[in-house]
Length: 103
Image (cartoon, rainbow, N blue to C red; front, side):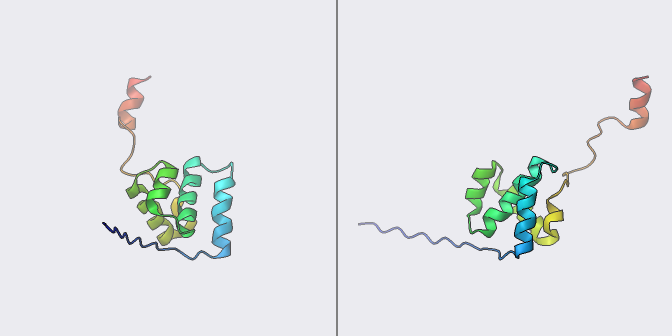
């Protein structure tokens, strides 16, 4: 007989009622990007005690992405869930060169 014991540690956040209302408003808003709603869902799921791997699967993102948004929410609140693009500018050709080519 083999006995397998797994120990799972779940860390939950305790969100204030105002934070819950704010996150739910982001999820249901038609005025914010869908990505922001997904980030808010990740935070809510974690606060409800869901495992990160479960949230990752539901949201369709990687585990590091879950950690990224949980960290930003912890540091900045709901404002941390908005439009911070990774990396530098997406402009491929400097504006002064690009403008000259298309005229």
